[in-house]
Amino acid sequence: MNSSLKSFCLIAFFFLPIFMIRAQENNALEILRADSLKGAMGFERLLGSVRMKNQSTLIECDSAHFFRADNKAKLYGRVFIRSEEDSVTTRSAYAEYDGNTKLAKLRTNVVFTNMETTVYTDYLDYDRAGNIAYYFNDGRVVDSANVLTSEKGRYEVNRERITFTDDVVLVNPDYTMKTNFLVYLTIPKTAETKGLTNLISKDGNTLDASKGSFYDTQAKNFRFFDGLVETETSRVKADELLYRENEAYYEGKGDVRVLNKEREVEIFGDQGQYWEDRGYSLVHGKALVRRYFETDTLYMTADTLISQDHESDSLKYLLAFSSIQLVKSQMSGIADSLSYNYSDSTIRLFQDPAIWDNRSQITADSMTFFIENEQLRKLFVKNNAFAVMTDTLVNFNQMKGRSMTGLFENGDLNTLDITGNGESLYYALEGDTLVQGVNKTLSATIKMTFVEGQLKKVNYGVKPEGKFIPVQDIGEEGGKLEGFVWRKEEKPTMEKIFAWRSVNEVDLEAENLFEVPEAEIRMPSDEEMQKSLEKWDTNTNKGGLIPLKKVKDFSNE
Image (cartoon, rainbow, N blue to C red; front, side, top):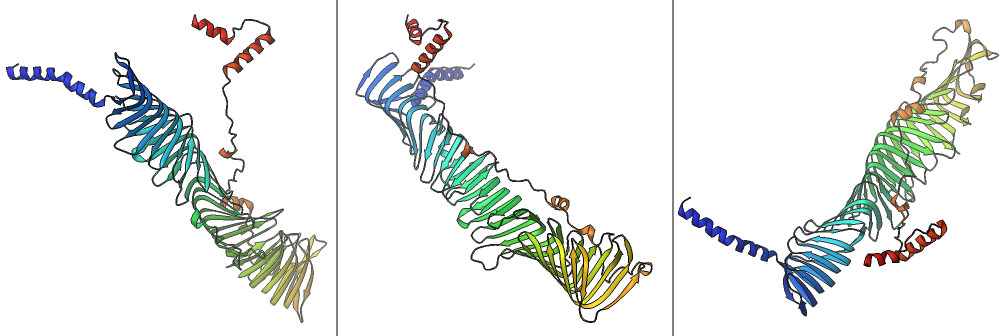
């Protein structure tokens, strides 16, 4: 080793302790003032108006134990810690401060403040180096808009981010939220949760999410995952549900459902939008409607559904487009499009509709039927009307005309009036077991009467033209009117409805954090424990228990 290198190493070795001392001094706790100071040898007691400093951190308290060698202090009475570099301040009744790690452990009546955000707790550790505060054993955070409480919390001051865990409650003037994991950003005042989340508004509306949520507390915008919103008049649910409260607007994706409680109509689909103030909803993608009656339910499928239902609107309706299927009790139907008038329960089917009851099929260019007291009561069929009824031998009795009006009773066709170029073909039976032939009749008007779905009487208008064809002369085409098509394979069934969209019913008994009792388990006092032990000793008559006072006496010996 040459002489210059040796000299450099000696100089470096000589100055190294000085650098280390200065580095320690930079982190060292300094005493700025105290009314009195007692002690030595690395332990000092500071009494009265104590002020200390650790770099940019200023510390005040009533008294302190200063462990100079460890660069630590225990602080007692009206502890106040603040920084010269930011707005964070802390207050507590007791604290421990480590000058090396810049970790403050604050206990009892802790108040941690950063601008408009304040944390209240009895147990808080504050990492000054990372500018992160941790509280445990319950804490409360207050800012200008919200109050949040939880068992545990982590406040990242530089990111203005607070993570709350275990029994989290957010309260603002409009809502109360409960969850077990919540991340709150103090500047935009947004709350993001994971897992089960429940809210109740000041109006009593509930907003629930089983897979977490996002809540802009100032803009009043919500996004729920597996979310459910329920008001006095409606219930909206979706896999992903957006709710803009100020606009009373909902938007859902995945298994969307909108229930109108007043109309007892529930709409399902893959995607949907709902404007609550307007009573207007749009649902599409494998859409399904359930119209609830007291003893029955009407099911309807469609590709797209539009519903308008508001008190201020004179016309309240439901529109459905493409792939229409209807099923209600013994009635079912299909169409390309449909309208349903809420006020008078009138359903109109368009573009090659067909409906079926127990034994009949009716087709036309369009048709209207009326539901009264939960039953199909009246049917009006317009243009190219064609009705087919089966008899006991499964023959097809047929009627056609420009228009038809049918009256129903208990789900069965009771009377059918045909007007305009009426034609009929029905089978003459002997004893309901033997076909004699068919009667074909032309008449401007035809009125047919049925009993339990079976044709019993036919009345024709002026100058009908008819003929009877014996059974042996019917042939292949003799038993059909022009335009006859039996479309039973198209008839909707509940199996087809469920194949279109299977519905997972809302679990109204699902877990809700507002229903969890807020019970607190209190530890018994020493006196209560002693009484309990003495009582147990007396009851068992063993005499082997040592009173707590004697245990304490032994420990002093």
